[in-house]
Amino acid sequence: MFRAPPARFVVNGAEFDYAGDPRRTLLDFLRYDLALCGTKKGCDHGQCGACTVIVDGKRVNSCLTLAVMQDGCEITTIEGIGTPHHLSALQRAFIKHDGFQCGYCTPGQICSATALLQELRNGWPSIGEPDDDLRERMSGNLCRCGAYSNIIMAIREVIEEPAA
Image (cartoon, rainbow, N blue to C red; front, side):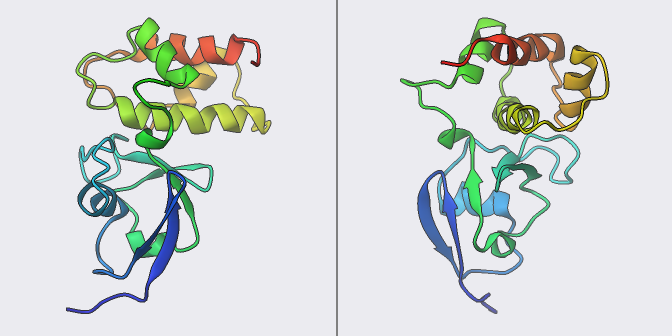
């Protein structure tokens, strides 16, 4: 089997090398090689957002990109955002506002919302009304249970809370 030239990247603060099958998606690398199973395989077509991770500060559907393409990149998965004993503000807000039901989409929702918060801090333009803007920015992440209003409430709470 053909092996790709080694790729080196940082995942949740730790360095990793990858020299495996060049056709392996980032999603499969994270789940099967690194055992980071928080990132979910939903549609495997980039339509649902369950596989969203953060690559160099930007939201990426990990099912649509290859692991070897991340050479030199910094990748953050849900496991890198908080821990069960030290949740991020966004994770706490999701719990407080019931921003999930079955929870399958939640890792992708939280990764996407984490990047969204950084986009807002960086001054990315808004489309108008705050909640409409948040809904538009989160439109790449689907929730089959329909927890959208609670997800928006959770994100809004983190936006509105004073900096610690």
